[in-house]
Image (cartoon, rainbow, N blue to C red; front, side, top):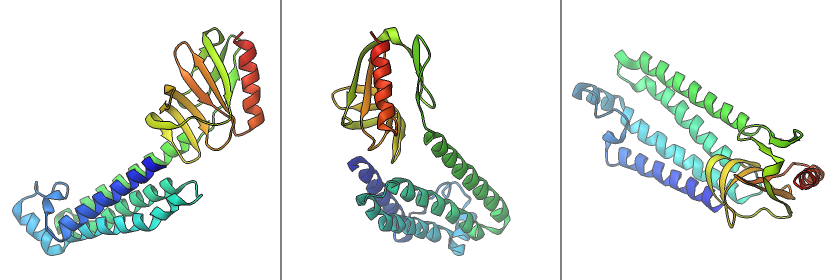
Length: 240
């Protein structure tokens, strides 16, 4: 939670600084590719009010994120997704709108590029979250067990060193490569006292199954506590 709030605050401060620097200090070089344009185009953009509106867009984005920040201190599970979803949609939509303040000769190209960028970015993020929220399960393959879905693998029962069921999930300190979502964690994470571990976790759905093999440390649970216990019983028997 502290890490997520820190990321949100850093993002807000960054947008506030950029917006202030562009609007108040007229540091237009902070705008992507502005300095790379010919001087006459720069002057035309300034006359059209383009750079000032870019700065105001950043300030408005920061303000919106500040208004949504209190969600992080409630029981609402998707506060991070809502805040960063707002940021992406508002910024990308704003860039499409700002195309009307481009110089006339490049206005149509800017509109097309901004629209394609918005569609591609939002589509990619939606696809990524859809994939990330796909559920997983633990399957018995006879001589091995398999965890399905993204980051899943197959492990031989003979490689199991230890199986344990935990009522509380140890503290997860850092995401290395995976999805750290509001209700689910999948992928490689650092776990206190365990080190680098593979997580397939439904948040706030104890108990949690810890499996240590020759090559990996794995934490997994099901949405159903009974199913998690069934996985534990199966692995305990097969590992002997």
